[in-house]
Image (cartoon, rainbow, N blue to C red; front, side):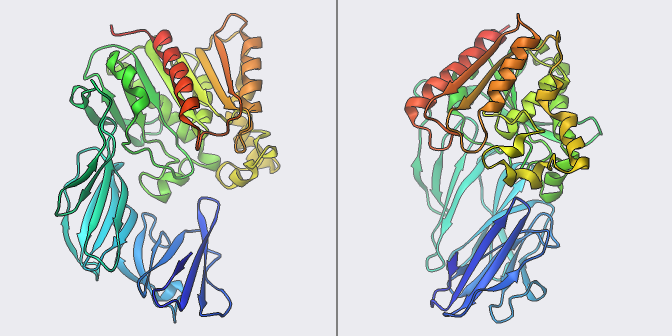
Length: 438
């Protein structure tokens, strides 16, 4: 909800799943009138002083900034302030004398400064391979604050054209410069180029942990990863793949990995693992894959489709029975992303990759650690429980570990007293299973 500076106008944006929004506008004490509805697109409107601005992917899959006249608020009258470009527009902050425009460029942040009418002025310097986690200002002040993170450095806040406001320090003894970050591109099964970040060991064979997400238009960008520090210090390499289904390249990239196209996500992930092996950075026995929630589905599908792919799997708060997923907790909300087993055609999509339904008796699966929260309100812990039981029955000699955290949910807001033991278990499992430096 956003209210104009003079208190006259109120705008409300309502999300419908991950691909649509509704927008309503009220004049004074009058009724809320629909401004944006019935479109297979997103728009978010807000007031900056008396000015009504909006971010939308209507007719702009990578988003654009528009200005809206409250007296004529329909999309046909919207005026472009920052048009769509080849890069995804993430956010815009308005100060008294400029616009700060945040784009994703190959899954990394870029911030450019524009005049209030949208005219480009310049790009500000950011640390390479970083993510802007906060871009703060107010229309009544010229001050602009930018907070960034990288994979190996925690948050730093600077005042643009000023200096460092606050900088968090990495753990004592950890030197980020010893663990280079770089980006590579590889081809997926259908030839689609996919980017991947590599963090840590510069070369040579050794343990690697590959992770990804690939869903709900969520982008995997560089963020401080304190829990991987022991793995990096032990000679490990972390790979973060920017799979289809995410938001790194706009709505087309998202839709290329949802519903009937979900297999593209798994193909992208398998191709990333194959690239790591072919590049001499690891061997299947020394490769671990890790994912949570939709990422748990990802690693579950990768394991059941390619049991030979890796030596260890960490599958956290996962969706694994995709034929029945929508019957539990809030999962009906995800039907727009995955489809519904109640629809025959969509049942076919789901069954084709549902990890639980593709466990084969006698197959040699990698060692796996499944985790769940006993009181998870999003993903029912039954997914992890029944998958662990089925894997144990299918291969009695296999390493199948199940970790259920009592009095815990999906992960948000988990106290440090629970986070630390869980992360210690996860990374101890990976280090033990994958081994140390070559």
